[in-house]
Amino acid sequence: MYNYFFKRILDIVISVLVLIVLFPVFIGVIIALLIVNDGKVFFTQTRAGKNGVLFNLIKFKSMNDKKDKEGFLLKDTDRLTKTGQFIRKTSIDELPQVFNILKGDMSVVGPRPLLPEYLPYYTDYHKMRHNVKPGITGLAQVSGRNTLKFSQRFNLDVEYVKTRSFF
Image 1 (cartoon, helix red, strand yellow):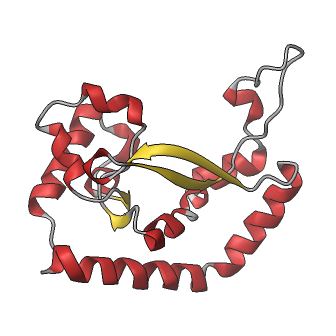
Image 2: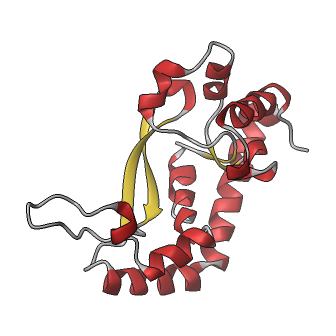
């Protein structure tokens, strides 16, 4: 019952509380990004969600859109702003994903949504990570995040899918 009803209610309640409590942070980041990114505050990217269905993930924009003489975007390292470095380091760039939760594309807890180009490379076992909505955080994130190998993260994602509960 929790996984099919209460989890969604809990996701909505947590998302609304995050919006209320962190509203000043949202406003501050929006103002800073309006200045450093020439008016562009948000970044969207297509990700694979539950059952592999694609959705647009929303994040605060941490890089500008500066281009070289030929009109191509500069390298990521050259486009990452100081404000962008800060919001990435503190994970503030992830905050707009509460709107993905309210929309129903994501959950607070679940496997992190990955780019759709990875879908063909999943093993049948690892495809189970798509049996649930992706989350802002998950078992892999609290177990080591980027210090883990991809296979370890995927195994933890599947462990979460198999054992998820309120606790």
